[in-house]
Image (cartoon, rainbow, N blue to C red):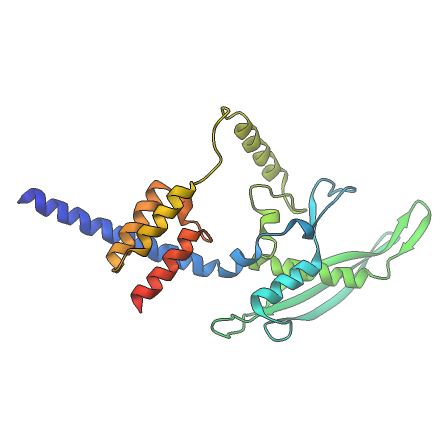
Length: 255
């Protein structure tokens, strides 16, 4: 009798833990809903920087940023907008730099609520001294504005994987991040041959989806989710087919 009571207590504790983890994951997914949509940059939007102080890093096509913002929030002026708060120039010897402050605003597609101002500051050169003489950049103000907008979009996660990710090569990456990534690459290269990089197999995915689709109650849902979260954690990552099946299932259960 005592053993049976202990078993029921353990089952209750497991259910509570599973529900807590699921709630925490739901909150995390909600908080990252914009970041997750905008962090991945396609290869055709990347341009390698081949000269200067940023050589070896990557730059992002500004039009891709505009397109991704429009895909997530809607057309500019309706789903997102910005104001130019200040333009100014500063002289450094015989050279002149221009700077721009902007405020970016986005509207949540679900609640239709506008955000507070998201600030961004950018800069560019107007007058530079080169070997052949003075060079005047007539697009300096435009470049400063583009730079400021990219900085304002960064906290939303637009292009985030450039600066923070397994292969981060963004122009703001620190030497410490580069050293850490190099060390991780060396460790991966030292893995024994035959080691697999596959996070889960197709058979595991199919089995997990079938079990999830068979759940009827929230308790069954939580038990299924917890099982696969512990045995094959990669299956529960945001965006996998199992994750999508779980979202659809919990919505149908709650209805």
